[in-house]
Length: 530
Image (cartoon, rainbow, N blue to C red; front, side, top):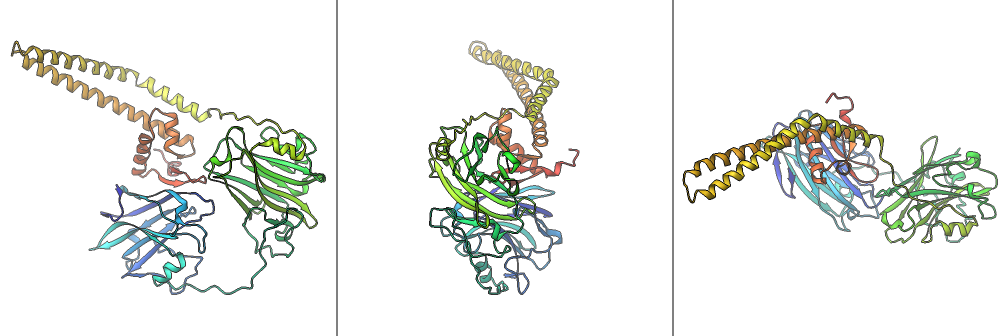
């Protein structure tokens, strides 16, 4: 059942309920968080003093690592709780609003009864920092669900404080020097004041900003850079340029792309969406490692993506060091330089560049005096899983060929009988005795048609369900309606209907992937004999 704002529904025989929140963020660092708040007699049921960074969940309610999938066990819920509300808040002092979200959907499933409700959350405006989505509440000793969608102009701390929550005030700390942006063009000028390694973590780099790796991170010699593009673009590729002290590229081997993925000395290794850098193995003549993205199709531009994010972490400890988010919606470029890793007197530093080139790699070649290769985009080949699915379709069609032919012939017979009946009806104008025979033949034809159509639909539905289950297994138990529509002769609506029906049976639930797209997760089938 799809709810509208203000609608309330009665929940009968309520047991364990799963709640899935799914949305797409138009900004990679939006960081919307979902909170479950329990109430008793109109007041928040919580401890006296709460750490603002650790909101406690009521007992019998759990949240998975994604922060978007809740499980509520109502029979074990604290008897004091008479209302359970679900809020969404942006981080305190966030520069964004909920307007930077789209395709927001909430699904509520009972593990025994199936789908309870679906809520499509409408868009917000620039003033909204939080929202109360929906609530479970007791009315006459019966649980009900109410879809509220109440936008809030206040954040997490302010809103819950107004509701009566007492937060522990954080102790005041001496202000440490922070990473600053460079205003001069030279990359040799970097941060001069040392920072404790524990203070600098996951720095949000701005264009032109520098960060010293040697000063702010201890024992950091192996670095991993991961690319995240929203939405995903198949022909957007990472490239790496190794530049010497003369600001030139020695030869074509110092340019890494899909056919040359390892730098001499193995100091840099390139994959589709990841760059691994070992500073100790870099050639001594290399003073700068430049990471850029290029669209292999030269006629296309980077502004097809909403944003591009490059995250930097320690390969060994997986410590998040920094990230650079480049918004590209108004950039008419084919190639863009994201980050530079460069030597300085203290060791190595990072610089966020964010410079684009409409002329593509030719401009990079002119700048560093080398001839870059032509990057051709080759559409991905059909996977083994796709071939297996085609074989499955062919096998099922062969198994049911006799039955399908039989019911198709029955349909043809039904058309003939109804045609004869129509002809007899015309003849009744001259002989009334033909009318009973026409009715008999018409009814028989209609019965044959209905029986044949229903049987064919049963076979088609069985074939479609078997195919979808095989696709779920072949795709590591994660699937989208688009995946089905590209392999089967069905539209997106039919594919969504099939996935929803499997979720209603308790076989899966909706989730969201790293690209911000909603998908269906059927991980529960991995150990199932279904």
